[in-house]
Image: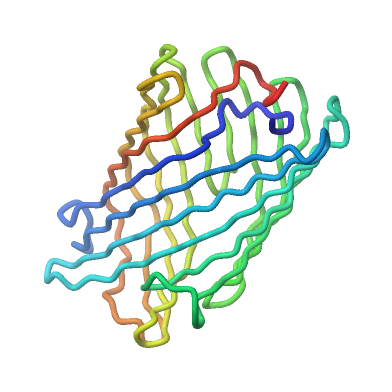
Length: 269
């Protein structure tokens, strides 16, 4: 279904959320996020695959004085995967995302952004694939550019390391068929239009967590995580009115996903 990779699973749909309590961060500002997604893969041919992955995200920030702002994102990412031959060591990915980011759920006005990425995947061994590429996003404060470096590595029958080192990386250990766990790193860089005053909010955050994935059925997974933010800040610009956030704190996450786990290092073989 997907090109050669050591990534151990593919999430078809899910919902998740995380919370940072007011009393566990220096800014005393609570943050609550909800996330809903679906990923639909299509086999165009033996060489070409398309994955459409729409998602909706909402993020609530609230001070001790009950002042609050809600940041919302509706995004349509589309990825094209190309592998020249079944046995080829090289595969390629092109990605585009179209989104509405603002303090309101809307599809008019200056709330739209476009992002894209290109990546090359090189299969070193049947259990190790290395990745590199570039990502570019049109944010409300200007262009955001990032080099991408990634790995999909089936270390042994119990351990996997996979994802993008500077964006979304996971180490997974299989305790049993129904319990997987490990460590996860996630980097967040977004901006949201403030529709009331024309300004915007800029978010830069990094999450380092330990997690557990618990099987509730053949393909239904319950995820729980706990961790801490690193170099977190949220700033209002050009009139966006909310206190500046610059201190880290503890975060707690949970979610559920419909997951297709692959038996070997090659997805779809």
